Length: 83
Image (tube, rainbow, N blue to C red; front, top):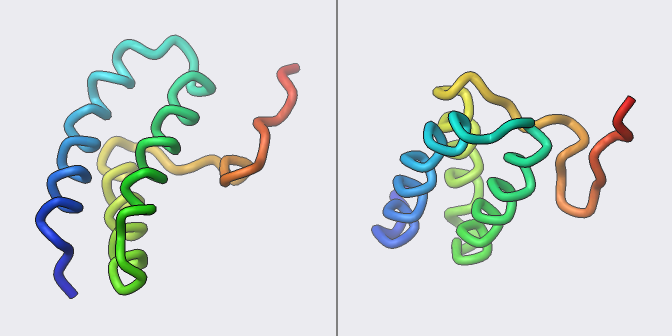
């Protein structure tokens, strides 16, 4: 299935922001909440039929920047305590 152009445009913009964020973020804990919020906003705009493709594209986007969502980082979860 093809995604709507407005969803694709928002994903493309998010992808373009990644390199900039990663270059200026001091610690990954600062990056993930912002990324997750923006990705969630896009996901909320997706039709049910677009969600699995959108999630796959997010994972591919992160992989392209050598990133993976940490296992603890899902909606409603908190980061692990700092040691």
